[in-house]
Image (cartoon, rainbow over all chains, first blue to last red; front, side, top):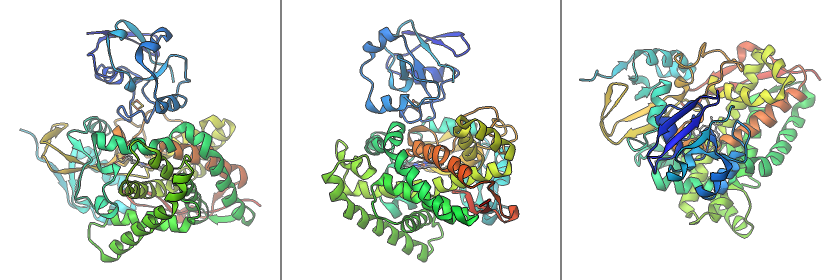
Length: 105
Length: 393
Ligand code: HEM
Ligand code: FES
């Protein structure tokens, strides 16, 4: 099981065991990670599940859809090069020990 | 063993229409699920319960073939789940995404807003429901749907008739007739517009549905355009009026926002939390389940009262107060889960970035003509119905 290291907005780190195949957003909700609201429950409609990933793993995650790309510009915290909607990312070994930052709104 | 669902039988339907919030409070404090006889529905009113329900669409389904909504407008995305829903949703999203709203709709919406305000600006007095909010909401929606040349009163009549028809639980024949007439009016308009949108692909909802993969059938187009008309006009209109009302009643908050225009977005979210344009929507249980310890049976319908959840004092302090500067927390006015309002970003842009800031900019020293004559009504759909104002000319 990959370990995901959520970096919270206040600087604290929360490391959790994640199940492969679940989304990062679901993993965050199941572990009560603060700052992931996920109002649309994973439909890429609300942009309240914004996370920032290290840029060097972005390419391992596959392309961003046009819809997600549009939505990311309107997340509450400003978009960064590593920004993604956590509901659109499936947990895999590529994310093992990766830091997933919750940007401060 | 779980407790029996409590029943409230001493509330009249008129009490709900006049002001549902005291009823919501009582019900919220009574239990997680309470049957309210006047509305003939089991209400879920607590914020956390609704959020949890929305996270479990397999148990709490939107599918309900017998619903009046399906009878009135045909099988539509609001009453589907899973992939069937996702495909139809993906067919309309390209017209409604925030970036598309900004690039394609903001300018036409600004033109509509300026035009409507120009017609009243010199008068010094208006009834904001009829003279401002309804025409702006209707004309903006017509543009987004791709309904060129349909006048705003027709849009407004269709919207109201479809809404009334979907709530016609007493089977009033006149309401049913009007809803049928509106449905066929919308269908003829779609038939008239489709060739144009087929020839010239564009960002409108009609065009997006034709460009979708697979393209939507005419039945799907009819039904989902009706959903957008019933669900996109009155709510936007009501939120324009609610935001203006909240600010007119709280001039100190208005002053702070005008000094710091970035706060308009936050003001809008507070307005739809304070008086949520959609107060309740239903879900149907696909199995026996406990909601916070209360057993509800398979096949039963529960009404998710987001209007009540947005006043849940476990989450919001002094919930009945309009306070743009309250501690920031998400609300449920646009729903939650996969049916999260498709028009969220349209209404945010139209109401909070265009209409309400322009109203306060151009109608100088705007004030309520007679604060006692403001009327707010409804519970499933709620908003100001009468708002006379005056300003300096
Ligand atoms: C302030 C304005 C608005 C509010 C408060 C609002 C509220 C809502 C709510 C609560 C739902 C969820 C219903 C459910 O889960 O059963 C919804 C769904 C929907 N809304 Fe809105 N709405 C607004 C404006 C609009 C606009 C402007 C449009 C169209 C341009 C629109 C189109 C839709 C559609 C198509 C759905 C169905 C989505 C789905 O089933 O996937 N809404 N709205
Ligand atoms: S949960 Fe809404 S966009 Fe991801």
